[in-house]
Length: 418
Image (cartoon, rainbow, N blue to C red; front, side):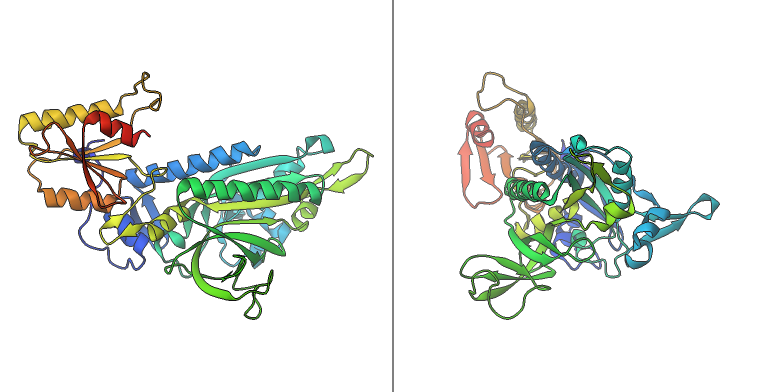
């Protein structure tokens, strides 16, 4: 992608009303645009990041047997009345449709997936079943703030698992827990598993929290065994697991897993016939992961005073070519050549099966200072400078480091494709 064609360009000023760091940097760097409190347009750079986060999540969900579906945002209000949540779910968006029918914008999807499966699950042979989606959710947050961390419209992955009994559900629960650790490791943010109360959905749950001073959640981490607890379930000053001292931390919740209460299965008549011919209720688990919230959390924990520092796995591009002296046709030609060569797959390279994603700042008569500031703000992992001074070498710098290296194109390829 050439920066001259990229929509939009960076902003120098912090947007009005943007208090959180992720809001400020993502808007200034051209990843998102705020439409109203808690509602954002994801611009080309931002959508590329969300897409890469989603792909990592998909790969790990598929690896544990998940099948992807796509459920509707618009729900029949009648389903929510059956569970009692039409009145009790306090951040529910309610609409009126044709014929004065009550409709709901989905904040979660139990009211859709349970009646769906009640039509298809009959026998123990139909179980277990693991279905997930990546879908937009809506919650009428009274205090939508903190950029992507507390929105009214947001992107989320939710996996629902269905089993013949609680033991089978609990075994799958462990697999999902491990898959979550793999996901966040690949994405590039540290998380701690935090015991929490389940609230609406279950009696207990586990949250995946990213520790950061900018977080809205409060967790307590044991200095002895490392166990972590949500503020709502902690009692006293000692660890519930080992009795060790607890340290108070701020954190961002990026995932939540829990067994579901049986009420949903009972309401929607989700039963199956076991091997003995007996009718039994289906056991289920729910596993949520905030896709857009994770994007905001990455920025909160991975930045410096100059801008964002994207992990390579989710960065919108891997290499940011900064062309200087581009009014010189020789320099422009060299920069164009490098830009094209990096994007071409090379089957003869054992470590390189695909081309490298590149953003090329091809603006002419723009100062080096402006281009470097934009590169730091956007936060692509590798900055490569092409100019009169670099000659037959390239000036290479990792966004996360301070050292500048002078490398040949061949050496650059080895670095970014290793």
